[in-house]
Amino acid sequence: MPTVVVRHDQPIAAALRGERDDLAVVRADTKDDCLTDLPDADAFVVNPANWNDEFLEGLSAGNWVQATSAGYAAFPLDEFAEQGIVFSNAGGNYGPPVADHAFALLLALARGLPRCFECQRRREWDRNLGTDLLDLAGRTLTVAGLGDIGEEVARRGRAFGMEIVGTKRDPDAYDGCLPAEQVRSAGELPDVLPETDFLVLTVPLTEKTHHVIDEQALDALPDSALLVNVARGPVVEEAALIDALEAGRLAGAGLDVAETEPLPESSPLWDRDDVVVTPHVGGRSRSFVPRFAGLFLQSYDRWRDGTDLRNRIV
Figure 1 (tube, rainbow, N blue to C red):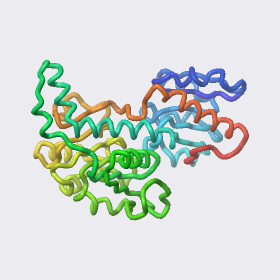
Figure 2 (spheres, helix red, strand yellow):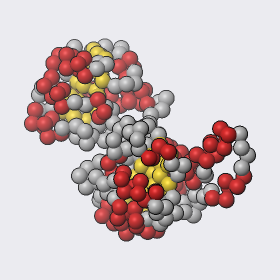
Figure 3 (spheres, rainbow, N blue to C red):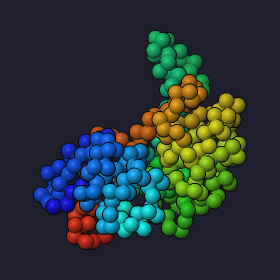
């Protein structure tokens, strides 16, 4: 009977247990549990934060590693290929919740919610806060990365009556809600930044996207612009972001990710009223576990039957 080891902080193992008569499910709570259980396993479910290269010692040719994330920069793809290990991600599983979260951050900043929350704690009724609030309709939203998540962000932007510009590595391959003239290549991002009111980052983390938002990119944005990062922390050069906020060259930032996670207690980002920080929960919701379990079980049936896996990367 095939065995899958599950290493995750959410009850994915419990959701999978009993769903297939021919699948044994083992929950691994620690790295040491993984090292003990993997040599006898056929499949491994793990999120990037819990991956450790030591796990390669317990994996062998034909084993299958299923990431719980869409991003996979933390995983050693070359080593998987060399060892004959199959690897798949959870692409397509996060578009709606992450897009919802991006707009939650965007609206919180545009509508001044951090300052309203502070007034609420002080029991102060200050209607002067309304003088600085922003409308979304008619503003330009730039979506950097028109993948599954970026597409959902663009759809929500259209519903708010925003002007949308999106970037994609291969614009010719785009088949979504935006007309062709509103889709630019990834290399054209610097060209659209000066006209951007709201910048939402949904790109995967790669060598090309590491620090794609650096000092130069931040300087290209209008001083009134708001930035939202629901991609990966290193997509933004954090030191440059802090400098831009402190100098008033950026109006605010909504961050679900950070260069170092957890965000260090010493980070000045915690204390700014023009920054909203959430602890990398954009893809989480009450539907997270059943949604992922459904994806895994579909892929498991294919893996068991010898057909191509959904979202196979290696």
